[in-house]
Length: 244
Image (tube, rainbow, N blue to C red; front, side, top):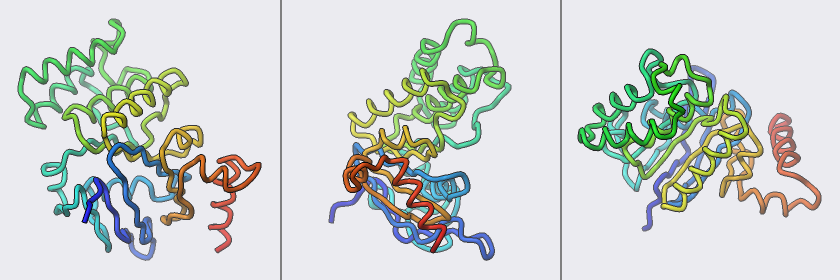
């Protein structure tokens, strides 16, 4: 039986009586950008954390490359890169210092770390390289956070609102990089509430109140309803879920 890079089988996470994620099932293939589209509080971040191995599902299973890994072990055993919704770097360190720290924690060779730092600094204006990341504009912080998630050249990339705070130019640049990673066979799972970003995904899962309420390829979803836009379909899916 062929395994997918990411498989979720009726994954549920409850906090007391509240179900943050409710029996979610999906598969993500190699070389695919899969979007988790939904409003704030829909359960996207909780789902990503369970896939990453930072949270234990209340029930259901997550498989990465066909294997299950115990909580806390997944990052060690599986080639995963993770960019959290909230800023995840050390604000008192520069971008290069963050990259060096992450590289050492990941066990990268010193030569590889030096090469990665050179790559990062080549992407940054000279006047920003010596500034701590806490002093940088939000968009530049997001660029460094994405670079950090890619330090180990992971096969699977989990991104939680990767363009938060980024301007249009940087947003285009980040998505161009994601498309390049896709062409190199990476599996990319992106949580977003931006419809324009969802349109750039191969498939989208529309999530509300912890459940998948609609899924499909953006173009096919639009073609299925003559005259409708993805925004119309998204709004109607959320409204239908609210009535049920």
